[in-house]
Image (cartoon, rainbow, N blue to C red; front, top):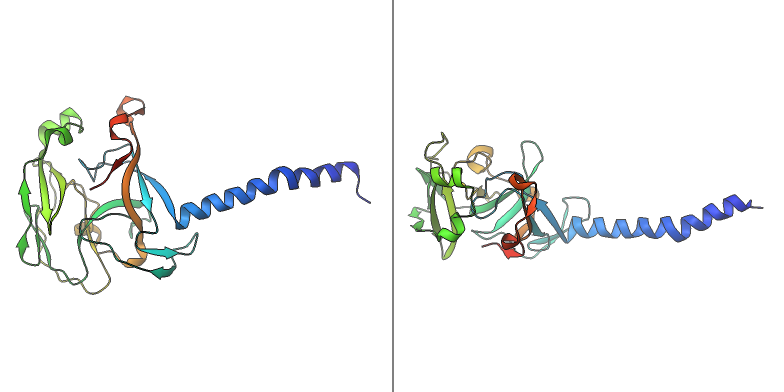
Length: 232
């Protein structure tokens, strides 16, 4: 026969703890397999994504994975050139956000940070000052900004001419499977020209919007104008 204390404990488990655990399990499974967010601590995607942005990740954009794993259960499409994707770094397992520049079988080359795809140069033009003005003034003064267009998809890019970086990459041909990624900030190191091409298993999903943005330099004060903004 149960004592009153055990009866209370059992009732408390059933009414309070068990529903909470089920809710947490469902929430984490949803984040693992369907949709999630990714905090951005570095500026490798400036001026498109800034430090303090929280990027919404659509994990069903390309396939369905088993929750809490990278096992692919079903696939319906593949990353397109120009997509902003979230993946695990093969170096240290940290989640990174980059843009797809090369698809399997492409010939990708960088010439002084100008992108060439299958022997054709990307088109470059002037960038709207409203986009570059969101970069902090000291860095903005030393940087160059432009738009980059490949196969009809246009996005902003940024560079710091005074910073030493790998600006030229010989033309490789990628076998079926890996993708070549670059940051929109072309003088930051975490991109395929440093870490190599990435296997399909490394990808988590497509970044489709900045859901929330805060300014680390202003005690994480919300940046309202950057919140709820679609990524190009």
